[in-house]
Image (cartoon, rainbow, N blue to C red; front, side, top):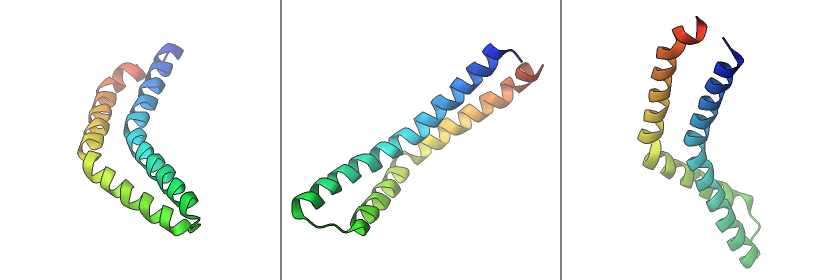
Length: 89
């Protein structure tokens, strides 16, 4: 296995991790910022409000994009298993 091939496979894995984790993290980030602004404006400093809102938003995002994310992971895994003989040998 050459270093170029190893770096290419590592890059592909990191791209898939970003495609799968990125939308979910973005949703949680946006909800956290919005809740933080609302809490700062109302001077209501209760951490459970932000946690519950983030958990609900993450669940909704998983329901909305779960099939796409799972399909992306399955597609990458099948491709990786098909490339495995070339990677090893």
